[in-house]
Length: 425
Ligand SMILES: Cc1cc2nc3c(=O)[nH]c(=O)nc-3n(C[C@H](O)[C@H](O)[C@H](O)COP(=O)(O)OP(=O)(O)OC[C@H]3O[C@@H](n4cnc5c(N)ncnc54)[C@H](O)[C@@H]3O)c2cc1C
View 1 (cartoon, rainbow, N blue to C red):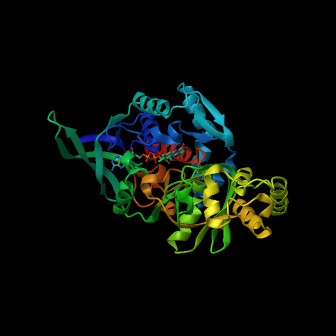
View 2: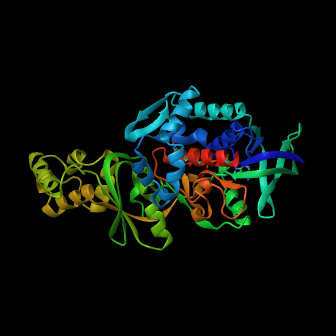
View 3: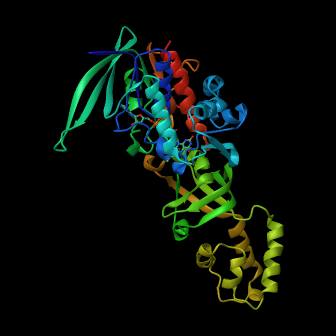
């Protein structure tokens, strides 16, 4: 039986950081990754550009974690956003800061981050075993003692063999990620491993996820992307979330940055069978009164033109046929014949376009997973389990999720850093 000091399960950003930190402290470390390569998800982050972190000040940073802020304060205090930026800069990855404080590699290529992190971990002395899935953790007298792995190997004829083996270690870090984008390897294994160790799991749901809408209004505008709009989520007519920026219509409903950010509120409400409505303000820069006079003025000034041509002044082209169909107004009508009631319909469409949210997309399309290993059962100063000695957690497997903007990767790196150092003591 091979003996290690530390076994890290999962080769995402949290696992690679934990393994490298433990190995850097002289520990014999193996990192077990079930896919044929580690960090598959990291390689597709930020639309392939990898939004590493955010330069927000600590309090703003923490507020992006919602109820997980208290837990994250310790890990961020020990390995903060500026530490992560220095970490990569020292390894030769230059970074740039973009809109909203988002930090990206200067090369605008997530693969640069992946390669650098894997090489760093190897140079620290980590043994990386790919195609290796952990199926069980073994304990003795309330302390971890090893892990059972399934080692998959391809034969020259293309068929696969799988062997079970026991590896021993006195510390184990679970860094298996969540359940989103399962094709990258994050299939929720860590929740089962943690449950077997006696940990509670806050039920998991897709988060930062596109939303489905009732009816065909959104579908008819699929492909249309809106900028500088304001959108609000109402739960049973009560405003619960607001976003300003970009969104888009798809074949199933709505997506884009502001929708993803507000999706958590919608998902929670839908899971409680509450009525969720999305209201879009296409012209947040003008009030209802200002828009009312503007519509009246344009209808008068362009009174001889057909309505279908005047509408281009108010709506994106892809939206016009949908507005015409739903408002029931004759598009051939001259501008000066459009009634006050019809003008109001146009104003309401511009300022308060309403879509009922009927559902959300699956884990296959969710950027992160909400829920996970219960935070009160983990020591935030060390990431060690309060139930089993020598067991640590890092990254998305924990009940932590944040807004978009680089906060989730920072959480993985910070908790990985703390877990690795604690496991390596
Ligand atoms: C499309 C997309 C874009 C994103 N963009 C950003 C972004 O720009 N900025 C940002 O901050 N966040 C982004 N995120 C979120 C971010 O990628 C995750 O929060 C982060 O990767 C979590 O890191 P992790 O190490 O905890 O888990 P993961 O990255 O999920 O890694 C877990 C690893 O564990 C392995 N594993 C699982 N089970 C086992 C097992 N039983 N045995 C062995 N190995 C196992 C998996 O194969 C996987 O490699 C994005 C997510 C997605 C899906």
